[in-house]
Image (cartoon, rainbow, N blue to C red; front, side, top):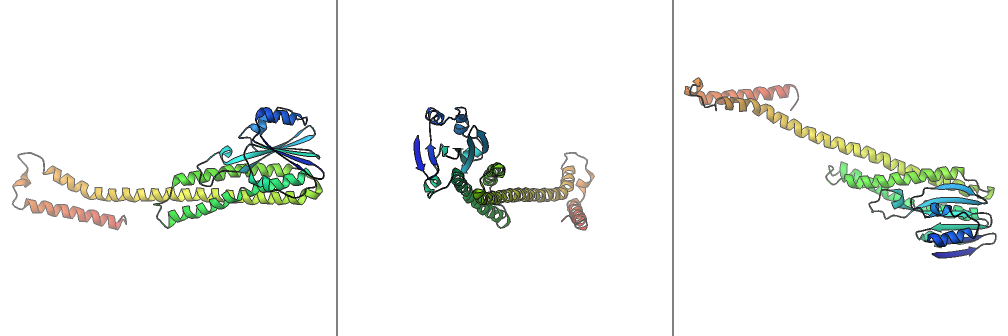
Length: 292
C-alpha cells in the first residue's frame, strides 16, 4: 500500500493507493468507519454512488484509464474507480490504480469539498481524449464507406468503438445523476455547476457517436444488401435467357430414334434461329419493363 498525506489549513487529505483488504480495514476503522464499506472500495466494477455513512460522506467516481486502441467493452475494463470518505476535517481517497493527475494536484484548499470537486474535474478530463478519439474514428468509418466503397470498413472496429462509447455514456449518466444530487457549500456551487456542464458536454459527444455509428451501420448493411440484390438480379437475368435455350437443347439432345426435326436439311439453322428469336424476345421484354 502506498500512502500519501497532505495537510491543509482546515483539513487533512490521505490518499491510499493499491491497499490490501487487511491494510485498508485496519486503516479506515481507525477513523470509525465500518468495515463493510471495504467491499465497495475493492470491488472492481462498482459504479458511481454517493451515500452518508455516519458523520462521513462516501463517494465513488470512475476515471477513464484504458488505452485508445484496446479491445475493451466493459466499464471495469475501461475505467477505474476512486473512493472518497470525507468530513469537514478529513478527506480519505482510496484507489487501486495509479492516477497521475492526483500527483499533479497542488495549492491550498479551504475545505474537502473544493479538493473533491477539483479531483472530479480531473476525472472528467480523463474522458475527453477517448471522446475525441471516437470522433476521429467516426471520420475514418465514414471515409471507408463513402469514399472507398466500403472495402476498408471494419464492423469489428465499429463494434469495439460503440462498446467504448456505450460504457462511457453509462458512466457519464450515473455521474450526472450523482452531481445533480450532490450538495455543496455556496462557495463551491460555481465549480459544481461547471462540472455538471462538463458532464453534459461529454454525454452529448458519446450520444452523438452512438447515433452516428448506428446510422453508419444501417447504411453499410443497406449497401451490402443492395450489392447482393444486384448480383441476384444479374443471375436472374442470365437464368431467364438460358433457361428456355437449355430447354430447347435438352429436347433435341434426347436419344430417341424418332425426332422429326433431326432429319431436316436446315434443322440446325432453324434451331439457331429459334434460339436467337427467343433471346431477342426475352431481351425486349426486359427492356420494356426496365429491368435492364
